[in-house]
Image (cartoon, rainbow, N blue to C red):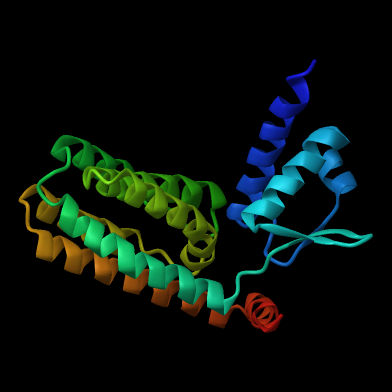
Length: 229
């Protein structure tokens, strides 16, 4: 019995976090323990523990006497996360060139070629999981475990932003071409090309996410309002 609540808390945390990250629970949504208990068919204790962890993750914040608010995606969040990515990932790609498992990189590249359909949350989730695995593998190839961990955390934060951006239009073909070119540079040990391609990918993603925010009035209002707080 002692381990039951922690196990249920892990399950609650995983399911609620997934729905927030994939925007099934939209940024700026107000939620409550009672609502989540009913929605996920879980008891109050595991849901309360899950919400505490999500607050620590920065995905929700408590509203006294009302419940919780799913944190908005602010324009500053976007700029901060992409700045960090531009500092870390191109350098990691340069370091990883010629050092990674070529067969594994090609397999991960292949896994992401199915693409996604805008508006289809499941296909976007599958695509983003494959994309994250690909970029984490590059980071791991540097041999610097702290760098790889930092990049993996950043990519987790990126997922919610990319769900907003990928819902705008289908970039499957462009992303596949970019990733294929990056694999070729990494396999042949061309660090400068790998660094350049990685930087261009991140800058394109930033423009896509900003475009999605700025063309979605309700999301933009949340982002601007949250950014003022």
